[in-house]
Image (cartoon, rainbow, N blue to C red; front, side):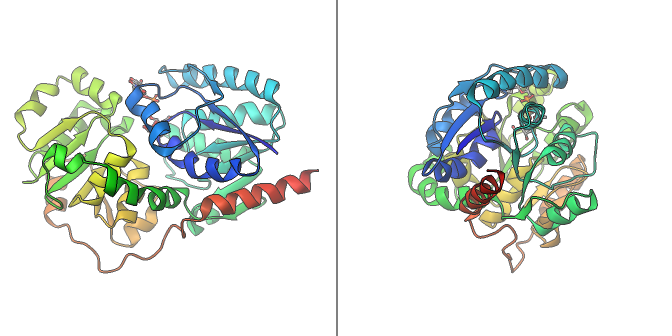
Amino acid sequence: MKIATIVGARPQFIKAAPLSKTLREKHREILIHTGQHYDRGMSDVFFQQLGLPLPDFQLAAGSATHGRQTARMLEGIEEILLQAKPDIVLVYGDTNSTVAGSLAASKLHIPIAHVESGLRSYNRAMPEEINRVVTDHLSSLLFCPTDQALRQLKAEGIEQGVHLVGDIMVDGVQANLGIALKQSSILETMQLAPRSYCVATIHRAENTDSPHAMEQILKGLSSLGDTVILPLHPRTASCLEKWKLTAQLGRKGFIRVCDPLPYLDMLRLCHHAKAIITDSGGLQKEAYLLGVPCLTIRKETEWVETIDAGWNRLLPAESLAIQDAYAALSRPAAAPSLYGDGNTASRIRKLIEAYMLTMQ
Ligand code: UD1
């Protein structure tokens, strides 16, 4: 079987690594990198650390408006698929790379398998929500991380090809946490004691594109009374410049800004953190898997189970709300298994194999 895997953004490298490994034991995988993320720290370093094979095809979609970026990818992916003739196309998550891959494959009548299917925020102002709705409706195989995802697909009339497989990020955390704890020296480099600091990441357009929201978030983070490590996504860095908030950052003694961190450093840093404050999807889940309480600066989340379990809380981008919620943080006694057992990759491989048999 020939599988074309499409990746392009940082979280997709993390999700693709375990599945790529198991697929390549038996099948031919062609890896297509759209070039959505292209900085070394946002892309190359993840391939190295996760043992993800180098891409067979590298597009240079780069950064642009959503339409232009997606269009560039669509054109490039179509050409590759026409040439490579894969049996199935594998896409991950909800980025512009995901929807470009799905559109290209569906127009060529190549079946699509979507990993991390069925998630919804029910907020169509998010580009990711549009990407995942379109991709789910085009996919033949829909791999859901949770029961909730399954129910959400059913509500949209999608029941065929839907499978509950657990979350592929569990595979990633299980495979890499031990390595991270041994190999990363991030705590020593940053001179941090375990549980004495908080890790924050902010990159969603709804926050970064609003100077008021960004100012409030920085104000909130600087008033927690603990050191806050803030690895800056390039989008956030340029917005802080644009909103003239970088000077303010320098004045806030508690916030320590750094470049985006490699996966292993980020895992160890988060594992020992007192709390995580984020607007990322993946990090909310990683916080839960690592047993670290999380505050999410968004109006809604796709990972509702973390909220129900008491490990995550949604907050507006308001400094006092952040400060109060941080002061009130506690670690719930129980952390039920919400996202599967870490065997998601092999489960997906078997389901793809079974599906391809039915197609012969
Ligand atoms: C994308 C995904 C988002 C995911 C995130 C992970 C979409 C719509 N969004 O958002 O779901 O959570 O990736 O990081 O696909 N930039 C660089 N260097 C890079 C990459 C980006 O400088 O290597 C800068 C550019 O200024 C660019 C901006 O970051 O305009 C945004 O990048 P883009 O890939 O468009 O979206 P993300 O915000 O990363």
